[in-house]
Every structure is written in C-alpha cells, then in structure tokens.
Image (cartoon, rainbow, N blue to C red):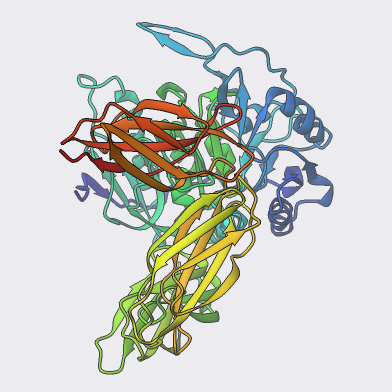
Length: 635
C-alpha cells in the first residue's frame, strides 16, 4: 500500500556552521589482496587531495577478520600511519567485520580506537528480564559538539563500499557534486516514523527521535515529508529524495526512493548493513540505487545503541561532515555500526550553484539478446555525468515504447523486450542529470529473423570421468545442427565450444573429465541463417560412483530378479538395492551385493513396487542412485 503523508512542511534556511576538514588529516586504507581496492582508494585520494604519505596498504581477507588477524595483519600497518590523522577511509575490499568469540562486530567501530586493547568479550544475551555480556562501550564522540580534529588516540572511520566496486568508486564524486550544487530546491527529505506512543510501545523514544529529526531538516529549509504511520514508504513514492531517516523492516531494502546525487539516508533495522556488498540489506540496496552516503549495523545492535535520527540530522544540517554527524549521533562505540561514504562530505558546505552543464552521451551500444535476438535487445549508455536514461523505441508501423532507469549513474543499461522479429527499430536515448539538464541522441538496430525453439529434454548422466548427454531432436525444418558448450562451475573461464553436431544428433559422450568437478553444458540449435536457439543448460559432476544402467526385471517362481550393467569404475565395491510401495517416500533396504543382480522373494502377485539401486564405494559411502524403477507384479 502506498504511504500516507502525515505532515508536509517547508521552512526557510536556518543558520549553518561551515567548516571544511583538511584532507591532510585523512588516512586511506587499501587492501592489496583485493584487485579493486587500490584503484578506488587512490581515486578518492586524488579527488580529495589526500597526500601520498597518507595511503596505508594492508594484505588480508577482504570481508571479515579474527582478532588474531586484526592484530597482526591490519592494526600494525594502520598504526604506522596515524600521525596527524583524524579520519580513516576504508577502501573497497577492506574487511568489514571483526569476529570475536563467535560474534560478528563492526571492524570500523573498533578501528576508531586502535590503541585500545581488545579483551575477551562475553557475547551479549538476554535471559528473561536480565541482560549480561558485552554491549559495546560509551562513545566519546557522542554529542561531543565541535568539529573533530586529530588527537592521536581516536579516529572517525567510514568506508567506500557497496554492492560493486564501481559504486564504491563513485561515492566521492557524488559527494563532491553535492557539495557544489545542493540548494534548498534541489531535493527534499523523507522521514518515516511509525507513529508510536508511550502507551503502546517500548520503542517510543526511538520513534520520537525520528519524528524530531524532521524539524531539523525543515529548519534548514528543505521541503520535508514526515510519515507517522506504521508501514514504510513504498511504490517509488519518494521523488527527489535527498535526506532520509526511517524504520522498520528487517534486512530489506524497500525501493521507494528516487535518490538525488548527494543523497544521505539511514534506515533503522537490525540488519541494515548486513552484507553491504549485496543488495538485500537496506544500506546495500540504497547504494545500488545511487545514494551517496548511508550507514547501518552489521549485526543485532539493540535499539538503544543505534545512531539517533534527530542528532544525525541536526549535525548534518548544521554544517558538520558525514563522519562527524554519524559518530556524534551514535551513543555506543566498539559495537555494530558501520558508515559508508566520504567522511568529509559536508552537504551544508554546498556552494549552492546551479548546474547548467549539459550531460554528454559518450557512448551508445545496442546489444542483441544472446538467447533471443529476434525479440530482445539491450541498450548500454555511458555519460560524463550521473544521469537517468530513457529509451524510446519503435519499429516500422508500430507504437512507440519506452523504458527508463530510476537511478543516476554514469553507466546504465535498459532492456527492450517484446520486439518483432526481422524489424528495423529506431531508438531515441535521452539522459537527464540530477539537476534536470538533458541531452539526446538517436540510433537504430534490426532484430534478427525468428530463432529456433529451445532444445527440449536435455539431460546428463554422470559416469566415471565422463558425462553422457541426450536431448530431443528439433522438428523445425530450418534447423541445421547443434552447438554444444561446456564450462567449469567456479572456474571463471568462458564456456568452450566442444562440439558442432549435425541435425540428426540426439546424444553426445564427453570423456576425460575430472571426477567431482561440476560442469555446465549448454546446447543451442542452429538454423540456416546461423541464428542460435535460446540456451538450454544442464549441470553434472562426473563420479567414480556413477549410477547403474541397463536395469532389467523378471518375476518368476514367486521371486523378482533385478539385474543391471555393472559400473566400470575402480571406486565401486558393490550395490545397495532399496524398495518401497510408493514412488516417493522412505525406501527400505532390500539387499547389498557385490554382483550385478539380486533376487527379491517378498513381492506379491498383483502388487506394484518401486526400486532404487545405488553404487557403494570402497569406504562404504553411497554414490549415485537410479531413478525409481516401477515393477508391476502380474497375478
């Protein structure tokens, strides 16, 4: 359901304190173990004019560290670079979390205090009405007031991170754009409370903080929507979103926002930054949609420790930078919060200029669909600015269709489905930047004639160091053959063409493979025009305990004889036969044998039974099983 807006306000600009933190007090941490980390860290350092001496290199896991790894691989290198430093920027590919006593904490939250030893922390727990264990420490930055400067002992840590390296790399550019072009008319605030009262919820004070945050944004002169109802904003109802604070849906990004370049927002939920290199959590999802700075928790924080909405918006609107606003609004240190974005980003520092430069469309690439180029194409657009892209396209004699992106990026792609085969299309590409400037270009493409239908009944049988593939032959007259491709799952290489087969082929034997390695096979029919059918995939891993084949049954003299072709593998020591009266269910063991047949004396005339046969390895491990074998015993 679409959110209802409880209060809409627009007030004049209040007084703000402008202070620019010098880039000389910023340390950029790069992880040499991640291939993207250095480029992103150095890109930030160049744009923010961070001295070369303020680049710190580490080499460790890029997601999480144990205490031992933290103390040995990260902390010593960082400590060697802290003279005159106030802010630490963790580049993409640096570890996000710290594992202490099997509990996940924010690594950044501990790195703020690198000279404080970390002892044995007892995991926090709640038993009845009592609490015990570690619940973080009081944050000395909390409500401290005044701009932060280097003191040699404590530091404010944020990170350049997100679902992709490209997103992380662009965060500083978004911040710089905001510092130049944000005005009171540029964007608006969305504040999402739940309308709680003292009488109906223990979370009333937290909800009141969110309500109060709206007053600070309105006082700064921004049009503000305050929602005081239970549900979240949804259905893309938040246009021109520049500021946001709200709650609550666990571990979920609700795609309600059209983020402006320079946007800042924090969502209150217990997993809001759990997996920021994906898009499920709120912070990761918002970054994927173009937010400039955000924050959240990597594990259950408990409400009283979370960043306070009212203080965050107060400091952000009053001229403090992103890092200061985050840490002065967060009551607990060495705990769960992590903040993503340029720490120096100071929206209130904005020069308030009007961006009148037209975006340039640097590249348009029209790409036919790999599976169905007769009905599906994609357009790739690259611009010199962060833009939204609209594609308007039409074939001869057809009504125009359009597709549009909902986020501002320098690179974008749009899918154009449901096209007509063998048709010339004209497409108009229009890009619009965050300040409303537009540019357009036109291009054209032609869809292919109809492609063959997808190959049907494509299956794989696992063998020792081999795979047997079978499929149903195409009945289409214009099909001339089949192309068969293979790749190794997890291998990273592109699929390799392993066979060019004739039209009457219905099987292929692949040999010399590695057991226990999973292969992906892709078969595509080819027509006389050289067009390929949509891909049809099957996955299989060869095994020295392959399933038996050639199963035969014979009921004679009140006994059922089951026989099969023996598996030719040195790894097989025998076979286990199972039986059940239904196709699905718990099959019971009938007999283990080292031969290639068994005799079952229990079946009764007039009954139907189902059998399975599995191979058994020399270590008594079970291998592959046959599909259920149906046997009807005649009366």
